[in-house]
Length: 144
Image (tube, rainbow, N blue to C red; front, side, top):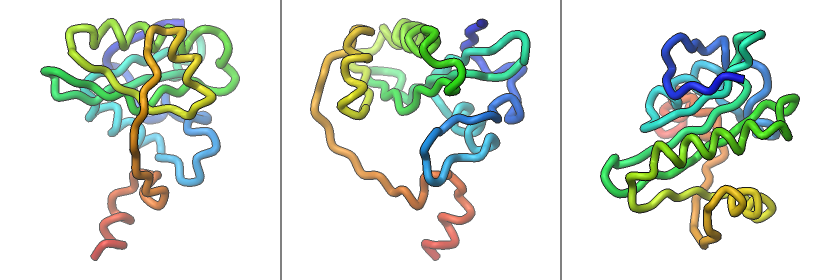
């Protein structure tokens, strides 16, 4: 497994194959690539044989005090091999210069992140599931 912190040499085709499991409106590989491009930091796990991205984590940030980690995904057939933990550790190392690093997760995942050095916290959120795909053209049509 190779871990990279850049999108150099990565294409949307390399993101196909099962990310966003159980999402009713998952982003396309092209939208997935765009969200990675627009992130403050990314870490990707690459299967060197298949040349596919099998896991990723991203962070958005002001670059001064705070960062938020919105997504950590590992393809189902690659789970339970330590890939997710490695992605989190690399990302946290990239963000260690910041005051606060936040992440929201379901309660059943809190112990996973605690093992990686994070602390439980309370938070609030809004989820507009109709916008989950990130397809901006369909979102704009619905608001006009």
